[in-house]
Every structure is written in C-alpha cells, then in structure tokens.
Length: 139
Image (tube, rainbow, N blue to C red; front, side, top):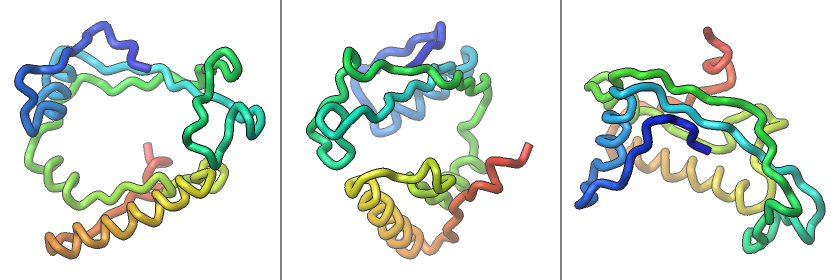
C-alpha cells in the first residue's frame, strides 16, 4: 500500500511511457514508500488458494503489515538501467521455496513467465539474466 507523501495522478493523455515518466517524476521529488501487507490463509471457503474468483474479504481476513519498503530518491532512467531491464527475466517462482507460488494458477504463471522470457530474449538476441536468491543477499 503506497504511503509516500508525494502522490501522483494519471497523466492525460496516457502515453506508452506514462508509468516510467511518473516514476521518474516521483523519485526525483523524493522516496517512494509502501507498507507491505499480507493476508493469511483461513480456510478453503474464505481464502481459497485454487479458486481465484473468491475475494479475500478484509473483515474475515485482515491485512497484516509485515514490512515497510522504501525506494530512495534516485535517477534511474538511464541507458545502463534500460539495457539491464531488457536482459532481466522476472518470475514469481524465483524465490525461497517457503515463499514460492501457491496454487495451480501461480504455478502456471511461473511456467508461462519462463516460456515468454525465453521467447523474448531469443527473439531480441539478448542474454537472459534472472536474479537469484544470492543476488538479494548481497549488501
């Protein structure tokens, strides 16, 4: 949940790069801050893992704040970062096993992300780089 004092609004008109443009403006003005919230599994009726049509109602399953995230003010929109973003491959399955995807839908997403990443990197003749857990343990 965003908690930054700076609040952006959707630009008019929306351009192909409006998310990047908005992030640039925000991080030039100051840090972006978020509360990281989770909801805990209760039972298959209220919090189904397999049925994505079930809404996890906050009155039954309250949000629990587990962390605060701060993205410091910075200039990130440069050629080096653009090249890195083309080489990176993201997968929700790239995590500690205890934090891995739960449920068939999320396991399928992991497989789909990998196939799409292989296709994109092959098509663009670019190396594929997928960060691993050790990358996140570096200070």
